[in-house]
Image (cartoon, rainbow, N blue to C red; front, top):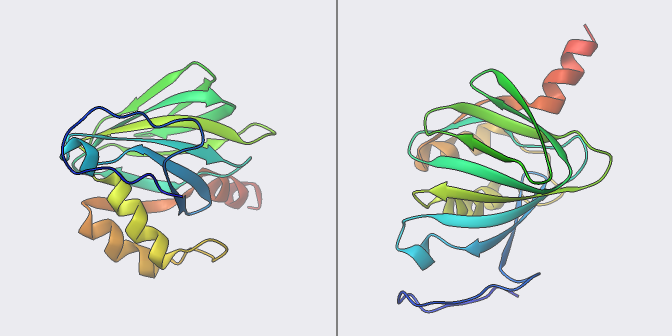
Length: 168
């Protein structure tokens, strides 16, 4: 059940297992602090990524993004640079950078993500309408959502690119 809060700025706490759940192209995301909670300043969410999964290569034109790894082993790619990160590590991708990540561990991984300014949670909610749970994401339906939110869809996830290069 989503936690509903007043639109007035006031202190609050989101407990373990609480928040607004959203399914984002294979990841389970829980919005802990929404863009609306901060009047657009930032958003914080927890993501669970299954083994060998991760988002497509993309770029945020207006948000900085950073991840704090809670559990698991991840490989990030930021502007072509590979970064390995495990529990306790923090990874930063500045606005304008091409980036993606993949859970390279054997179990589900968890990350806490912050974006500044906010807005990515609103993008996730809209993206879920064109790429619902259980569907195969179609870039043709996703691109207009990316564009409306000042993001660019640049390529497939790391796992798809790895599979393609090993089959050649």
